Amino acid sequence: MSEDQESKPRDSARYEALDMLATMVAVVHPGGECVFANAAFENVLRLSRRAVQRGNLFDWFQDAGRLSDTVAGVAANTYSSSRFDALLRCGARPQEELLPVHVIVSQMDGPGGDVLVELIENAQQARQDREERSLDQVQATKELTRNLAHEIKNPLGGIRGAAQLLAMELPADEYGPELAEYTQVIIHEVDRLQSLVDRLLAPHRHAQVVADVNIHEICERVRSLILAEYPRGLAIERDYDTSLPDFRGDREQLIQAVLNIVQNAAQALQRQIAEGGARIVLRTRVARQVTIGKQRWRLALELHVEDNGPGVPAEIFDRIFYPLVSGRDGGSGLGLTLSQTIVQQHQGMIDCESEPGRTDFRITLPLP
Ligand SMILES: Nc1ncnc2c1ncn2[C@@H]1O[C@H](COP(=O)(O)OP(=O)(O)O)[C@@H](O)[C@H]1O
Ligand SMILES: [Mg+2]
Image 1 (tube, rainbow, N blue to C red):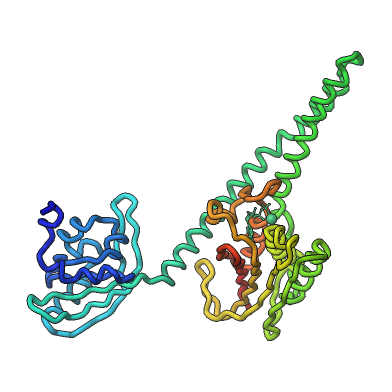
Image 2: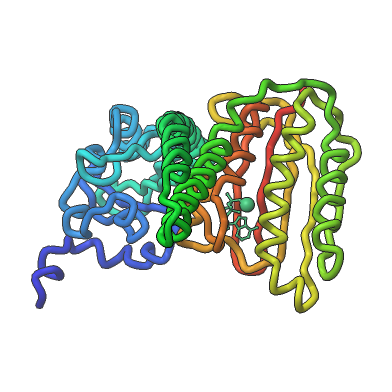
């Protein structure tokens, strides 16, 4: 008999079918001692089965008082089942994370007053936290980029000027033209850097011009710009909810934000455009009770830009909104950063779902 089997509490074999469940399930004694925890639970706790089955359920919760009272109450038959929200502590310190879960405690048939504890990840809560974190991150990255861009920009003028002076001082002999090529390289590269930092700083430079904006007008404008660029092989379908009201915003900036996204989709569709079957859909919808960052809105609009291209490369998926992250040859990696900045200046956000054959960029903008 292996050591592992020896150390396994006797009852646990009865519950092994629970390993098949995707939700987290544990069976505990009235005092919280763990009789069994299924595979889903172990995974989330990031503990071994042995560690879990020697442990006490209450140790894995933040403020376990409510849980221990409930388990005791259910075990003592005070009530047959009870539900509430709690925070599960996953992973070891110092990287411990708190996972919001919905807890359901129920009685079990059989001896010993054991209790069944089910945990359902509070997905919405989790999503919201993730979004808040990512907004903070975007903010931090933005500041870093801006400072860095300024630092790079400052000496560029000096470098360019010095290279020009140098070019004028070059000897008029046979070496002159060759050396002049070097100074040209310096000037050319400085200009390239200059335009890069200008674009990095661009979204922070212009004041917003606020007026009534119609999302479909923006979509139509972007659609005709892209179709002018790709006159053949690309279909851009519209699926508009025309009941959407106008809202206050900067029309030109929003056109730029949407254009960057649709342009990316068209670029991702190169092969389909050549072979036929390239398709982008612009879809608008109403959304109710949405949370963007820390704020809740009663009403919002969603603009989906969907394409049937190959999907965002997996290795950059988590970072596509960061500056300078690009999956294309010759890409600047600034398009989505700029779009996200503009949409955030409108209290909105952009997120993305992507798999081969279907990529969906969703712009959410609060409505009055
Ligand atoms: N619709 C899409 N399908 C596939 N990949 C995409 C799509 N949109 C964006 N991407 C990926 O995200 C990257 C970043 O986009 P962006 O910030 O606009 O920078 P750039 O277009 O200059 O590369 C792109 O290079 C591409 O790899
Ligand atoms: Mg782009």
